[in-house]
Image (tube, rainbow, N blue to C red):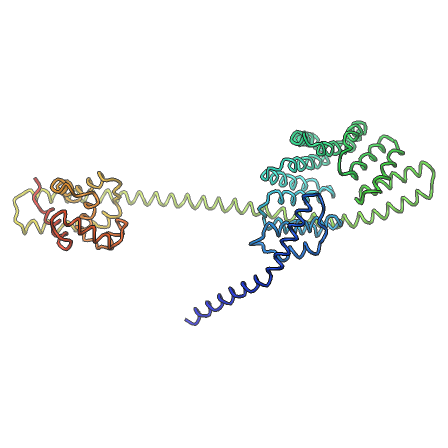
Length: 487
């Protein structure tokens, strides 16, 4: 008793503590939800929400049980802020943490996978990037976001290209362009990606033709970088240095800036300007240090992403194994049930054979001239060869005709004779009479007929009136009726 009271006291303390904590953090939760809503609104307008402190606070405050999607969004926007600062390791932590909450927004999950894939693609971990882009594509399909789905396909085709799998890359690129053929910005970005592919294959002429049709590409840093690479491959150092200067004005991507300083150094070397050559070399070395720092961050991020992407597959494997085990257990249970049904059927058949032989013997003796004492002794042997449990449980009366046939089989034509003499008797009355003959209690009858005991008492009283007797004398009346000689 003391132990039980202790459990009650502990539960009450836990409930009160939960209520108090929820009251004290209500304002914080409201502020966190406003932060996420504001970040979401700015994101739809193409503006990055840069308040990292508020986003981190929102991610800590929101409950994964009541605000799962909002918490995931806060972590997603926090990860994007880290990515803008070239802090890919904490960004990957945020993306992974957000995906673990399994937000209901499929578009959000697609963006999480897409950003993780972008981190991998920057480090040229294209095999892992392809897996992530495929996951992103599947989520965008669920969200019916055709444009983002096309972008995911475009990035996937670029990763295939870097793996030198050009056939698959071209087929995916064509599919992406076909899906988003009405979006000119997408077409411009797709053409820039294709120009990048041509530059990788050292085919600057078609690359330049595609770049000239891609001026509307909003990613100017990438566009100018490809222009500079293309003109450098065409041995046009002046044009390459022109676009390199444009890159330095707008870009902070280490790879783009380093190549820009390289092209400018080549131009200075051509002009025999030693000071500028040394200056651009120093700048390029500075950006190489920044790139190494970013690469270290990115390598750590990729290790975390690769480890996380391995775990969902393990989870899927566990789900498959559990489903397979459940199926095996279900099959075994089905086999056992069929085996039990077969044994039960054999037992019922044997019971029927025994009852039929007993009935034949009793009917033969009842049809002979016998005294009342002899008839009573014979009828008292009914319980010796009729198993009440077998009748109630083993035989399931599926319809009214089957019910009458079974009662006639077990009780020497009792049902047919009773219905013939008392036409107002219903099938339910007949069922009640049989259960009464078998000396079932009101509780047993109620359970069998799926009614309450009070209803059974009232039904039994009305059924007795139909036979002209009372509830108390009903069983004796029915036994006497069975004991009447059979014509």
